Structures are given as C-alpha cells and as structure tokens.
Image (cartoon, rainbow, N blue to C red; front, side, top):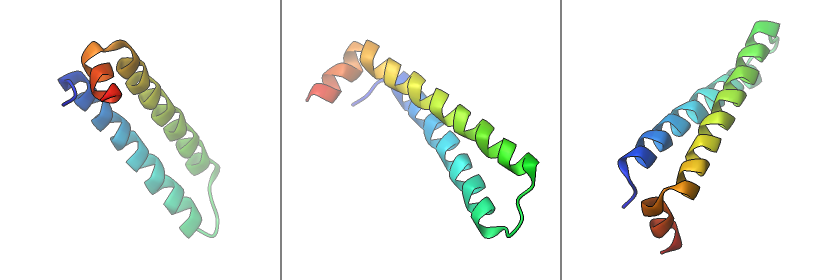
Length: 71
C-alpha cells in the first residue's frame, strides 16, 4: 500500500493527464485549431509534466513508497 501523499499526487497527475488528453482529442476532432487552443494544450502538457515529476520525486524520496516499489 502506498502512502496518502502518493495517492494525492497520483490523483493530481491523473487529473492533469485526463485534461491534456481531452484537449488533444478536441484538437484532432476540430478541422481548424485556434492559437489559444494550442496554447492551452501546451500549458496542460507543462502541468502534466510537473505533476508527474512531483510524483516521481515523491516515490524516490518516500521510504514507504520505495519499499512498495521494490516489492
């Protein structure tokens, strides 16, 4: 079992990824893409990358999470 901080960070990461995927799908469905939409997707990519990095750093530094990952 992972720690509660991992669960919180994982949920934030999953939420950021879901938003990014929805925005990407919207771009693929649309024949014309506005610059603002592209900027939104780029911001979402950054948010997802940051959330994932925080999650990975937590796993690397948390003794409980490292024990679970090693098992």
